Image (tube, rainbow, N blue to C red; front, side, top):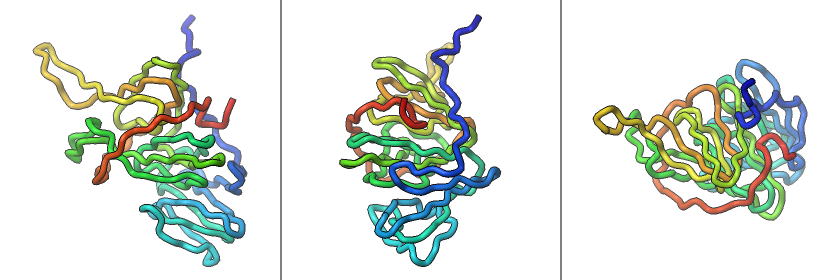
Length: 237
């Protein structure tokens, strides 16, 4: 009998109502899910401007580090305007998450930076690297809300453990996880375009079942920094 113990696991559908890190959220819809958020007085979150569906006038907007900051009180709705599972990714103090650009909905208690991981570009954009959004928790528990394209799978890699993930289906990883490109070669030894990304533990990795469309790279690149490990993108064991 086949042993599927170490295979990536499908993350189950989320409950409609949740309060990760103390932010009241509700998931609604099926074809293109909406993340509805209810902010208390003085509660502030970071969102992607392109993901904003609606908000109450009482929720104040401001620019912060390339993203929109929304401060309560007030309600708002967010979506990537396409089908795909919506998940909260918890971060403990000091942890960092690297998320494929264009998959972010909301961040609470986390700093943000756009990075370019060199050598992981695609031929359609001519990019030299893969654009990722890095979120880092401060002194308190943080949460990042993510929308995958299709379903979301995850794998917890042990120290030195390796998995290859399709270039277009890579979604997220802990900053502790190393990443490099893998390109196939023909019988003559010539190398072709990147076929997949090689991820090396320790840490969490996640991928989506529908391939991402290529996006323009950011201007600046940044070095990866270590972060603590955590057990799962879907809560904690």
